Image (cartoon, rainbow, N blue to C red; front, side, top):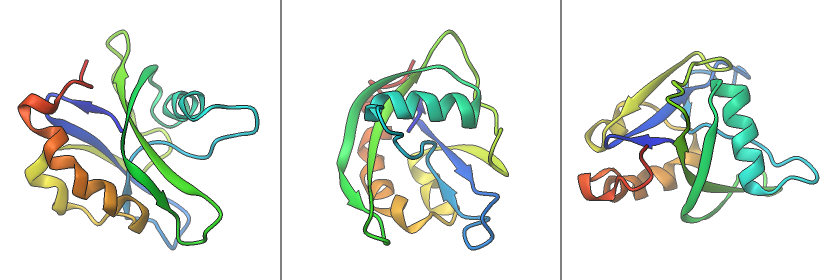
Length: 129
């Protein structure tokens, strides 16, 4: 996830139809031969057009509903003043801790959302640029 100034970046899915309109954190599948960090950096470039430095993991592994994968969450720092753009999503928003419940999250992201208020507190913004 991308955290800056006490806010986290959330992205609205545009497809497939069964999840369109639901919100998630940027990222995706780890390809063969990639580490988690390499996959996240690649996905941020593809989905948001940004270069990032991958930092600490946040929360536990979250098994996905289909049972074939787990969700692992990392804090990333935007590099060189890059600004995210919604290249593969319907839209995106920067959310404060108080705004986390204003969007309908994908089920896989809900456990991570529960961990965010502490991370988004002013003293918890170490992952911010």
